[in-house]
Length: 238
Length: 245
Image 1 (cartoon, rainbow over the protein chains, first blue to last red):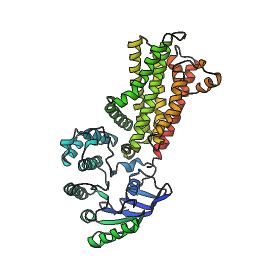
Image 2 (cartoon, one colour):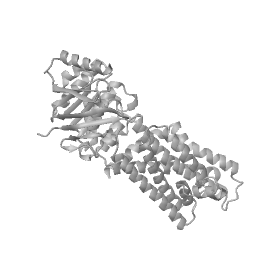
Image 3 (cartoon, chains in turn cyan, purple):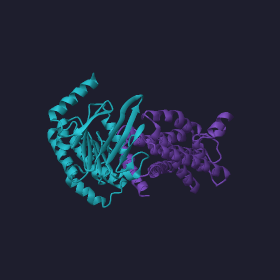
Image 4 (cartoon, rainbow over the protein chains, first blue to last red):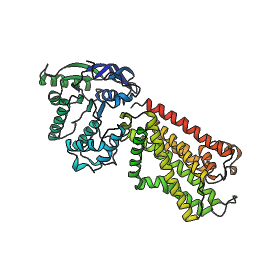
């Protein structure tokens, strides 16, 4: 079976500084992969490249057998991105923001789908609230609901739980677990080892733009993974 | 076409949210109205133009209003969404083609220009009793608004900092306001300057807005604005197709 995502020798440089260096990776359909790495490791840039927001300087990316470059419309309906920051139109209400997104993706039976997501993500009490006024956890729930609106096959979650309270984090983990059970392919960037252990089948470590290792979750103990992560982070900061 | 409708709907909802805000109202309407009152009251009776100065001034400021709203509001909306709130990402991530994105944005720019231009005309008629609108005037507003919205889209997609729009305003828009024949005829300028100013798109817009009949000059001015619209549309298309953060 063809992989959901195939990344081949992808690199990206900003202002002379290499942010992603020759990363190659394959993610199987239905798999949840954790992308681990310290700040500035290139995780977000790699996610944006998979989503088609950033064009690689070298290499290529395929999503479900289709090239991402060239603004391929076919791949866009298949990918849902949950960005690190709230990128919704601040003046719009949750309802308006989701309606606009649904119209852009030509979601069939949009009203029903919105009702379904509002129930699933408990958004009824913030439905008429401006997206710019949402708390971090609620904004993250709305962003996930928005990404799921067109029923994408691949979900990219960029540090979905950073800065959230432990109870909200647990709640989001449940949501991700449900999405995995529904057969979606998921890529999560995170700083948290616990998150990787709970949610991912495989974990890849990015450091200074390079993929340092890739292995199945469980091949090493959580403590070992954590020790390696801390060591790498120290090397980078030194 | 559903993509164009979706983008147009997005832009209109966002415009509706902004319309009541002081910052928007000032930039979109009060600024041209100040010109209208200052020049209308201060110089209304002093200029010896054929049909009087006030009709000349009202048409000229209607042109300025269309330019400011279609250009600036489009450029600001795109650049702030791209660089500050990142909300522009939702258009790039969506399965809407580059052509549909640019078309939707241009149509919204057209609406911005027409609404503000119409309000300016209403004030002109209510306060100064001047009515200048006719079929050609409407055609000019539509073509001019599309032309300046296309320019605004390209500028909004090109700038790397929101402040860069101020540079465009200072070195491109402001000179067009004052030297594009909005407040006085170009014939009042030194010949060399009049020739340079004659090439500005706002001058083409003003010429159409003030025309009584559809003649060769009007045709030329409309053609110039249409060519610019197409050129900037194609440029915007390329910028969306090659979009990268």
